[in-house]
Length: 148
Image 1 (cartoon, helix red, strand yellow):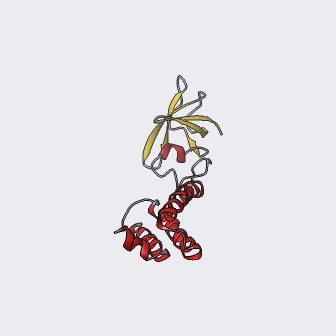
Image 2: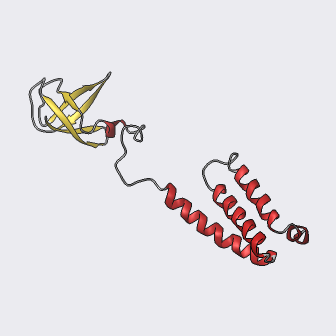
Image 3: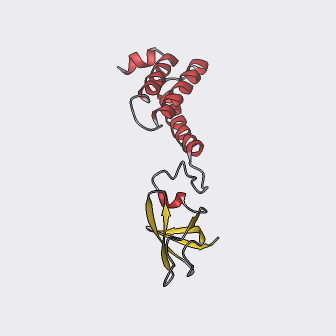
């Protein structure tokens, strides 16, 4: 089997690379693409230099590790705070910075605001009903507010 693989020269690596890249469409995530690119580059290197399959396998291993590391760097999420689109399942985070009106006079630093069709518990300074407040952070299901 290895003799057949070695007899194809660089083409065996190109075929393996295309199979791996094609497999990316069947597997979730982005991982096989980096291995497929490593195999394609190995095929080009073998075609250009004519090295044996043992050395080609070593080149493939090195390129695979390098491509996976490079891929992780390129696809890493930024450290910025997520906006409304990326914080899709974190409704409270989407409300930070928004201004709402207090439903009833806040007593003991607690009150409620209406957000769409729901009512949220808020904590902050004691304010009269109808006062505008700005959400500064979220503590669980409670909005922490300040006077707007």
